[in-house]
Image (cartoon, rainbow, N blue to C red; front, top):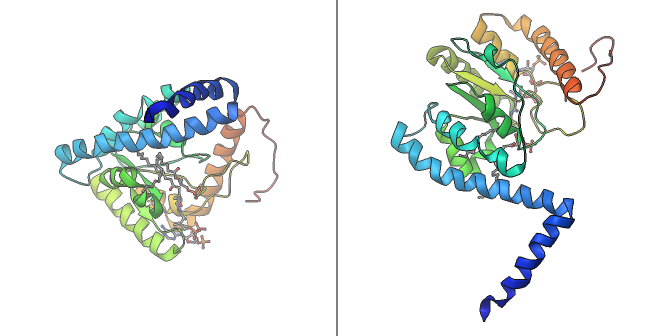
Length: 233
Ligand SMILES: CCCCCCCCCCCCCCC(=O)SCCNC(=O)CCNC(=O)[C@H](O)C(C)(C)COP(=O)(O)OP(=O)(O)OC[C@H]1O[C@@H](n2cnc3c(N)ncnc32)[C@H](O)[C@@H]1OP(=O)(O)O
Ligand SMILES: CCCCCCCC/C=C\CCCCCCCC(=O)OC[C@@H](O)COP(=O)(O)O
């Protein structure tokens, strides 16, 4: 008798999924969070048994487990230029950041021995936080620049010593305004340390990367690339 209320729910749910795109959006969003939490529950013991704790090799497990999630959400990815990531040694990957779904794109192309920089708040996201820690994700406090810079300097040393790669979202936050936010500098400080450049190269490297990413972003979005004249970001 107590379960009688389930019947209207079971009837209304398909109706809403069929008729309301807003409902579908929020349904998928909740599913995504819940499913990633569940996948993390499965991945945590696997990583601990495989690597004994925090280890960048755990990113292989995470990558493997996340790659099928796109099918549930009706997403597909087209990858080009993947071969450029198949080089030895440390390097920095930068990407724009529109949504938490970016993680799915990231896992499509994530090379071996590559982790990422993330805001420290993610550490407290339940099982997802724990799997991020096990995967060697580097957590920074965005509100304390000096702390973040120290953490990233240590990460640069680890990158060189252990030949690891780091993925950075240089906009520093999610942005859905149809363009790119000005880049933060941390990714480029990492890159110069990994490639033997100097601090004088940071601004140029950042501006060039911004220009290239903006052009690609607009092209993919189907918008025409307009000249901004001198760099304004
Ligand atoms: C099985 C289920 C599994 C599910 C799990 C899935 C796992 C996937 C997880 C994916 C996680 C994704 C998370 C994404 C995020 O969290 S994005 C948010 C965090 N990322 C960032 O913030 C990007 C990195 N940030 C930076 O690089 C910033 O530069 C920062 C270091 C934080 C400083 O920021 P800020 O002060 O706001 O601005 P500036 O960049 O302008 O820097 C100020 C001056 O400091 C100089 N600087 C910066 N960094 C360095 C450095 N490393 N060394 C020396 N100096 C540095 C910079 O040049 C500026 O000075 P000048 O103006 O040039 O004089
Ligand atoms: C104790 C329970 C807490 C529950 C919290 C749920 C947290 C989310 C859990 C699963 C979501 C799927 C994993 C994707 C991780 C994506 C991380 C992400 O995209 O973070 C945003 C960050 O880059 C920038 O943050 P802001 O845009 O500055 O904000």
